[in-house]
Image 1 (cartoon, rainbow, N blue to C red):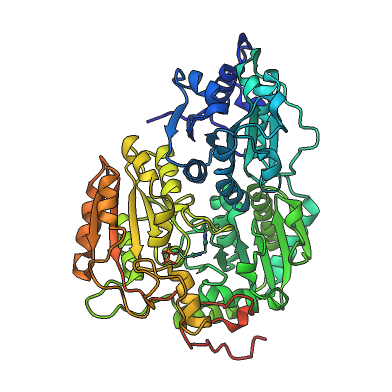
Image 2 (image 1 turned 180 degrees about the vertical axis):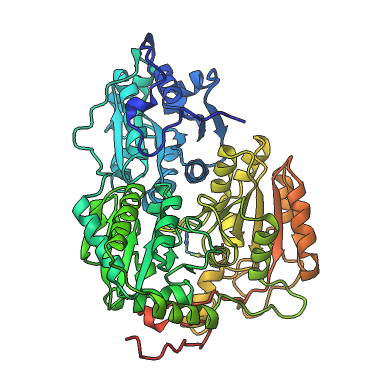
Length: 617
Ligand SMILES: Cc1ncc(C[n+]2csc(CCOP(=O)(O)OP(=O)(O)O)c2C)c(N)n1
């Protein structure tokens, strides 16, 4: 296994990435300096595709014994792979592309990483500095294009700047609120002769993320928590990124408060924990959504009041005071005013809160959440997550996903695409550990699963990695299975094949009078989508396609074969495995809060409106 000790982590300073006390000063090309800089910051894996402008960098890359380059089939795959690597390992993911179309193919994964605060560094070649602005061959202003979707970006035209820029890029990506950083390097800077110096002096005068929370705010927050009657710990992806699951658990158990974890935070608090109410939001659990609606205190940690969580904002959590802790001050008060704002790293915030809450208890200040738990337990009991069984003889998608989770277990990493299968995976796989659930939450990028799983597996070769994908998503990025097959990255892919763009079809069923405009995947335009397409019309045939890409392709159509096929896939570790699960096409994701409506309108299932009584309102 690869040793990653030197890789930058959240909270490191650039100096901490330096290899040792010895200073290196060597004459070399800008391209060599780039590779040496990547080695020095501890980057061990780069996903990319060469081309004219970046070509000088690929030459010394060939000689590096520390940096493994994985040749992907599409730059989008490189970007999502870098994201999956970062989400699974906690280290900065790296992708590389040439100028123009190579760089623009990275735009979607960069936007995706930005929305989900994932630390990646994208390195792109640029046309020679004199040609910039002339519409030169393969010129695109990738810094301009990615300005609003990167945490920061750099255009390098002087080779001497390369080590400093790389050190700063990794530092910015990994610290504070993590995010993508782009480094665009002109071809002549890569080709010219320069002096590589390491360690390097960085200069980021305007960048000093506040990690240590203010003591007074912590005391105020603790006071609210110990005096609330109906608090909820509303936990977002920031807690996961801060690697603060241990501290979260201590605070939760110290206070006895209920916990909800957003789609981006799944795994940071064990699903099996009795204080866990599940996920809030559009497809959240009834207890989680309702607890926020009825709460008198939202204790918000590293979450951002996303519209998929709040539903109609002005009716969200109408009775609640708000404590909002976030590393990014711009998030606080953005969507919902905070009574107690706290700026800081979630781990430090939680550590200080534990002490402050204990001090309140020691002073005799403690309120009783017993009545609250009576209600919460009642909702948990009355409205558990569940699903209707499929018609006899057919596979239900939820059952397939649930069974994968049960047989593969909570030690594995699961990467989902976007759609119904993503929601079912979030609902029916029991997540017990942080960094085992990878998904595109903010951007909702179809095609994320296969390359993200590839990146995760490249970073965590000893951990089983499953992609749970939709048949629509799979058709966007499955070519990265070739990359997996050729580079010994044996991921498993479960295609939840319902023959349609299921999530969109669900909205057509509910809101467009069952007019299935352009959501049927396995049949042409004459098919109205109300009946499944006739057998034998599998275009493409995912089993054949997977075999053609060097994978083992399996198909499962009957419930009685489900366990055997999952076990068969689990036993194959020398190649990627794809299982085409043919599931019935009319399953829907429940619970659901329809877009734009209030969370109070939540439906537990079709036409099933929970009755909470009015006593708590
Ligand atoms: C790149 C991109 N294009 C379009 C969409 C809109 N969209 C959201 S879910 C979905 C359907 C996904 O279908 P599939 O992968 O088969 O998953 P299912 O919902 O059937 O589980 C679509 C088209 C999107 N999220 N991302």
